[in-house]
Length: 63
Image (spheres, helix red, strand yellow):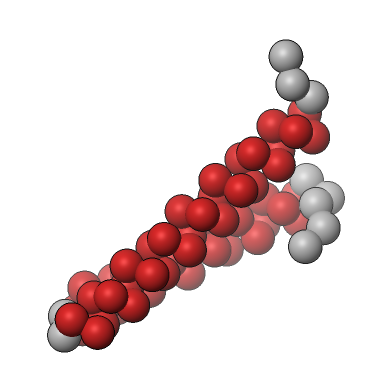
């Protein structure tokens, strides 16, 4: 069984990866010429980035 710190690191990495992938997808949609989907993707990426950031702050993790 892993420690709580190790589990939090794994969760933070997963949240950050998902936020980055969503932002990249929004960028691809913007380049492809789908502005509505790009705006929705940017909004989703902003929410996921905030979730990642607040998780790290709440658990006292450094950047």
